[in-house]
Image (cartoon, rainbow, N blue to C red; front, side):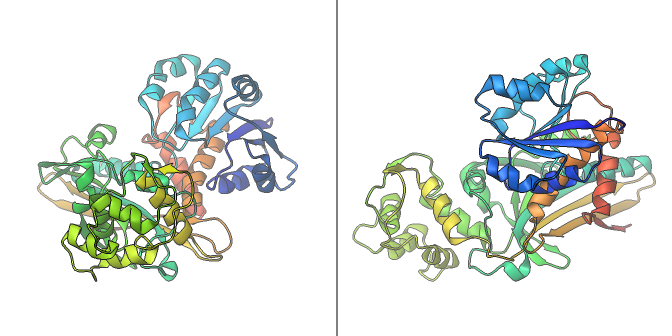
Amino acid sequence: MNASKRVLVLGAGLVTRPMVSYLLEQPDIRLTVATRTVDKAQRMIAGHARGKAVALDVADEAALDAIVAEHDLIVSLLPYIHHVKVAKLCLAHRRHLVTTSYVSAEMRELDGAAREAGVLLLNEIGLDPGIDHMSAMRIINGVAARGGQVTGFISNCGGLPAPEANTNPWGYKFSWSPRGVVLAGRNAARYLWEGDLRQVPGPDLFGDMHHLTVEGLGQLEVYPNRDSLGYREIYGLHQARTLFRGTFRYPGHCATWKALADCGWLDLNALPVEGMSYGKLFCTLVGCEGRKPKEAVARFLDVAPRAEPLRRFEWLGLFSDEPIPGPAEQSPLDVLAERLLLKLPYASGERDMIVLQHRVTAEHPGGETEKIVSSLIDFGQPGGDSAMSRTVSLPAAIAVRRILDGTIRETGVLVPVLPAVYDPVLDELATLGIAFEETVSR
């Protein structure tokens, strides 16, 4: 880059800070962070000479249009529902766009217009999706370059408390609103396992669990993550007999969340909860018939009162007489999400952890079988950035720099599955300590 490039980051949520820090370190970038709550952006900019914070309501389309026009590249870290609106403004002003979110059908429809305008709309360049795509394609293309063919692809990812911070019965903690995590527990899933197509309805998601041992962490639980079959086309895995993407959790998670789902805690229908206790709501969900909530739930689930899920429910206060705070009408899912946020926070100085692992089986001419295990374990910095925020925002930040300096020259609506995109990003992530360890056996 010769002249300074102007980058606009929309949103100043919990994953934004590592990106802002990275971009402010680049001498040829002038950075604007625009958000509704401007003091958040000001704290991130911290008076840096090449950065500024701006108050912006994205519902104000004239203001959004004007600020997009003033910059060379836009990063949208807004909720995904706003991305297409931002993308259309980027096309109108011929500005590149980077997001960490999945490509929606509406976004995909902009591909032709983006190519015609010479604009790159790069999506899915965070952690999951993002680093998972890039690292997977590097392995898959490496197998192809050696004349092999991938016959099995298993990829699992999870954000968890670091082992020393795993201090509550739930084996989980939240840095921000759990609603998205709780909602994900309603998703149906499908995948391919040794040639068998398996379809999992949302209510059965947590019943489809297996264990996997990760070196350095021990045994973790895995459950399926949405529709794995879409990756047959994205990754070119047309010959794979196993194609599975899953989510890592600490042991006991799936039994607990299956029990929550079975009891109706993931229901989105609003109920009148004003003046109601958590225990009373539980009775409303399962029918207590004169029994105490814990006894009624044990009977409903057909488990012993000392079963692990019930111990976790009790610790969370779901059997208690404590009144439910908030609006007079709430869904069970929203009541649960707020309770989780209250009871499962990270304490000051505690570290989070992300775990991403690919297990790839390949066959080579002559019948040789190759097994590749590629693992990334990254920890948050005590008192600093979380592993989740680093691994979501740094891939996007690196892509921003590489688009502006001409290293990444593609156009259209893309995800980072091309070597021209993933090679520079993965290589620089490794210099920042976000690197995979790989073992190969034949």
